[in-house]
Amino acid sequence: MVPLELESNPCCDIRRKLAEQFSVHARLYSEAVVTLTRLKSLTQAEYAKLREAAEKAQERAELASVQFEEHVERHRCGLTDDRASSTAQPLDP
Ligand SMILES: [Zn+2]
Image (cartoon, rainbow, N blue to C red; front, side):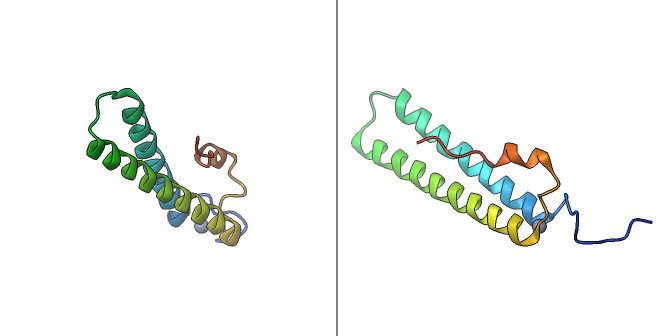
């Protein structure tokens, strides 16, 4: 049997949840930005609403990214998993 030590914990639930949150909000953000740049005939109210949605999604993605990094650092649950790098990309401005 494999002993349950802290040295390697690649399937941490919290870590997976935070990564998921990050990717969801990052996607919402980029979708809002795409909509903003594609639609040329938005009313001012529509524009403001989309912009707000984009900003909120960006904030949440950043928060999730910070929480993810803090968790991994404290819990050391992602350090042996090289694939984790694909879930922590910086956001485009
Ligand atoms: Zn963890």
